Length: 483
Length: 83
Image (cartoon, each protein chain N blue to C red):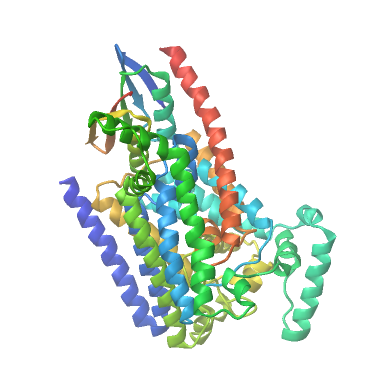
C-alpha cells in the first residue's frame, strides 16, 4: 500500500513538472531555455539520490570511516565529463569558462569543506537530501546557501575596513574605467565588491589547453591539456593513492588467503594490484554507474545549453528576459545568473537576496547581484529551476525506492545544519562556486583552479571530521559509562 | 531523538542512530565497533539511507561480517559481527 502511494507521488511530482514546463512554453517560447534547466536538474536529482552522490561524503567517509566509495564515484564522473568537455570545446559547443586563479580558491574551499561535513552534505548533496525529506539539509540550504550567501556579499561597514587598500584602489580604478567605456556606474559598496573587482578580477584565468597552446588551443590541446593532463591523469593518480592507502591492505590479504587455500605460493603481482583497483571501483556499483551517468549528463547539459544559446542567438538568459520585457530582472550589464552548465550556489544566493529585498534590504547595490548576476523573480530564474529540479528529481527517486522520509532535525542537528550551511555559503562565494561550480566543472574543464578548490575542500573536510570524531567520542564515552 | 548505544546481552549490542543524518550514523557505527570485542554483534538501527552503503563498505574493508540487513517501517537495520 505504502509502495503504491509512493509510486503515485513520484508520478504526481513528475506530472507537475511536465505541466509547469508546458505552461512556461505556452507563455513564451523563450522559456524553453528555462525548461532545459528544469529537466537537467531533475536528471541530476535522480542520479544523485540513486547513487548517494555527495561530494562531502567523498573525503569525509574516507577520513571518518576509511570508505572510498564516493571518492571513486567522483573520479569516474570527472574522467567521463572531462572527455565530453574536450569534445564540446573542440567543436565550439562549450559554455565552460575558466575562473580567476589564486590562493582564494584554497581558502574558500577549506571553509566550504568544514561546512559540508558539519551540514552532512555538500551543496548538491544537501539539495538531493532535501528531496529525501531531510530537514537538516533544508536548514543548511535556506539559512546558509540562500540567506547566508546573500548577506555575505552585501555587508559593508566595519567589514570594508578589513579590505586591503590595494583592493580598494584597484576596485575604484576599474569602476572609473567601466563608467568611461560602458557608461555604467558599477556599485562598489560591500567588502565583497572590493574583493571581487579589486582582487579577483585581476587574477589570471586559464585552462591547460590555453597554456600548452600559447593561447590558441586546437582540438589536440583540449584533449591532451584539459582532459588528459588536468583531469584524467590526476583522477587516475588519486584512485591509485586511495587504493594504496585504503583498499590495498585488505585486498592483498584476501588474495593471499585465497592462494594459501589453493596451496599456491602467496605471491601477488601487478595484475593483482590492477584487480584490486578494479574491485575498489566496482565495490559500490550503484555509485560508480551513477558517476559515469553524472559525467555524461553534465556534458549533455553543456551541449544543450550551447544549442539553446545558438538557437535564440543569445549568450545569457538575461537577453531573453529583456526581449520578453522583464528588464527589472537583469543586472546593470543586462545579464542574470545563467552558468550554462551544472551549478548550485549562486542561484540560491539569489533566492536569499530576493527574500531580503522583500523585507526592505537593498540587494541591488552590490556587484554580485547588481552588476553580475541580476535578481530575477524566482519563477523566471533559470538556474534556480535547476536546483528545484534536483530537489524534485531526488524526491521522485526517493519515493520510487521507498526511501523518502520527512525528518525534522533535533536541536543538535539544527546546530550542525545551520553552522555547516553558513560555512558552505561563505566558502562558495569567494571562489565563485561550490563543490560543483568550484571543483567538479572546473577540474574536468581544464581549469587547474578546480583542483586548488578541491584540495581546500579535502583539507576542510579533514578538519570537520577531526571535530566530529572528538564530538562523537565524547558522546560514546557517556554511553559506555552508563553501561 | 538521541544516540543510544547499549548492551542487550552477552556480546550483543544495539546502536540506535535514528533521526541522525550523515556522517553521524557511520561514525557512531565505527566507534561502536571499536568498543566491542571480536565476535560481538551489534544491531545498528538508522533511518538515513545514504549511510547504508558507507557502513556496508566500511565493514567489508575492516573485516566485519554483515549478518543481516532489513528494513522495518522506514528504519534500516544492519546486524554486524565484529571481525
